[in-house]
Image 1 (cartoon, rainbow, N blue to C red):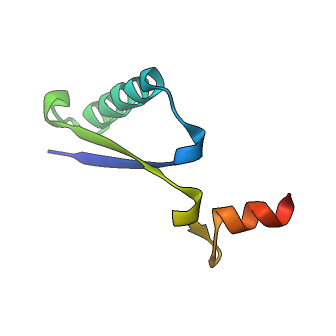
Image 2 (cartoon, helix red, strand yellow):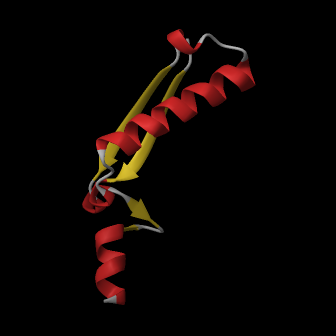
Image 3 (cartoon, rainbow, N blue to C red):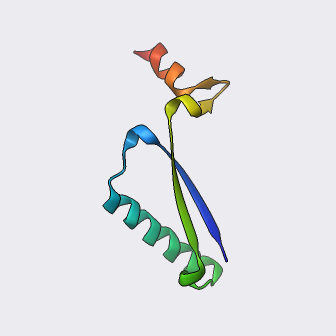
Length: 68
């Protein structure tokens, strides 16, 4: 049973229909690539605040504040 976890920035505010499309497409890709049953494939989407996501030792919030 594959489990795919996708993390996106919360501020991107993906609409429900885009999340559903993403889940369907990822499920299809896993089934095709790994030969797994789509009904047994789990996909989760975590929306993460820019304060809780870091690159190069600093949060995305801090990086964006420097460029503003």
